[in-house]
Amino acid sequence: MTNAASSSAGGPSAGPAPAAPQASYPPLAGGQRLLGTVALSAAVFMNVLDTSIANVSLPAISGDLGVSTSQGTWVITSFAVANAIALPLTGWLTMRFGQVRLFVASVLLFILASWLCGLAPNLQSLIAFRVLQGLVAGPMIPLSQALMLGSYPREKSGMALALWSMTTLVAPVAGPLLGGWISDNYSWPWIFYINIPVGLVSAWVSWSIYHKRESPIRKLPIDTVGLVLLVVWIAALQIMLDKGKELDWFASGTIVALAVVAVVGVVLFVIWELTDKHPVVDLRLFAGRNFTVGALTLSVAYAVFFGNVVLLPLWLQTQMGYTATDAGLVTAPIGLLAIVLTPVIGRMMTRADPRVLVTVAFVVFAAVSFMRSDFTPQADIVTLLEPTVLQGAGMAAFFVPLVSLTLAGLPPDKIASASGLSNFLRITAGAFGTSISTTMWENRAAMHHAHLTEHITAGSAPASQAMSAMQGAGMAPEQALASVDNLINGQALTMSAVDIFYGSAVIFLALIAMVWFARPGKPGSGAPVDAGGAH
Image (tube, rainbow, N blue to C red; front, side):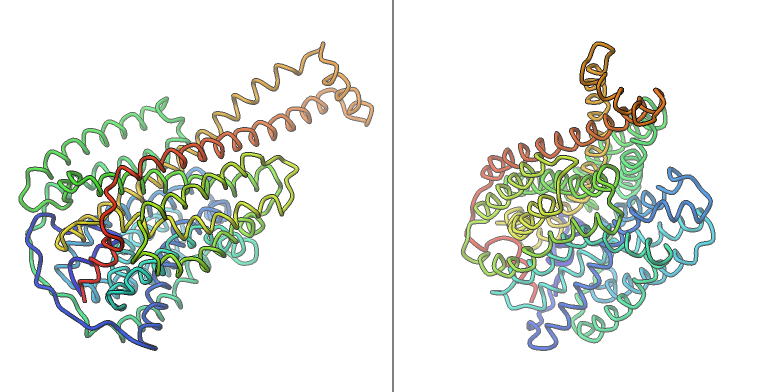
């Protein structure tokens, strides 16, 4: 195992410092490789699931703890901020403690934090335990990818990366489904307790298989100033994104202050990191065309994808009358084609141009968004499920080829930093996508509501007929007006969601042109093969 693979999905290593000596281990085979794959995938699924499973349980959590829903959102914000801060430290922590020790320790601490979250007697303690959970969750995803790549032969590295990516993309969709079912049938602490058996098995199997395959350890000076600046601007940015909609964005002095801190912090951070000998994040990677194009394309695409993942269940629950469980069932089939096609994409990675595969993925995503732009409040279950199932095909061809393209042509000692920085940008972009999509949904709904109400006048024949019919059915004039207003609200929110779906389709088509600015490289020359050098 190697430093080169250690942050393939997460935190950057200490940038331009020379690479550590690489330990060479043969790939796993047979039952050991299968068990290792399942154990690592389970840990990743548990981790990623936890970022979304709490969303649908917020009303239950807030009500049980006696706080408002807006106060309860800190359960989400605290985890997101802590996780974003911990992620870039993975490279340094790996070099200090070793991949296997750090991964297993992170899983065990994640279990402990989950247990404490379930036992939390009040909001303050729950937020504190969620901060701990977010901090220890940071290294789990990148290290699971590194260990997964080291488990497979070089020629099957594409398959390893494909299997790993499938869990990271399916889990956010499964989160609302599982969280809704638990909230509807049990109590909210169980969304945390379910991590305990999964994590224990994952940690035990991982340690049993990988403890003799530890990566080399070395000590490097930590970039203290860079780390402090990183913590400051990431925390300010994440809190701004999470609380912006609630506080009415820049109409709030708090949001303005957070924005100033984030902007000043990131400017100082960039200046410091470009001049420090051992930067915590190697920003010089942006000098490479493939990395810049690949990382930006991946980030924008993930922001749009994740924004839609959040918006669709919201629309189903608020406008279609779906329960949290039913809304989750509509979004869950996204994983069907992804599971079937991901192994095929993994095998194609050794001979196909990643740009072609990404183009296919974006065409599928655009088609899915165009299909959703025809949704109406009368849409039946088949109409809702068709684009969801189709989207799975795009997911299979989206993540792995883009990661491969982003890392293509980089020297092995830069892979860890490059993959970590790319993943950090992706997760941050997902936070942007969530905030932008939900805010636009409400803003455009208000606009559509204003336009629709312009037609509800005393001289409007359809409006007069509708009011007369409702009053004839026994409604008072005020009740009839309220009923009409509710109908208009529903139509306005649906029209707004349709606008966002249509805009998402246009963005996906535009990204096709963007990805072709990258150099093709040799087929299979990206992340899987380079990371395979870790063996």
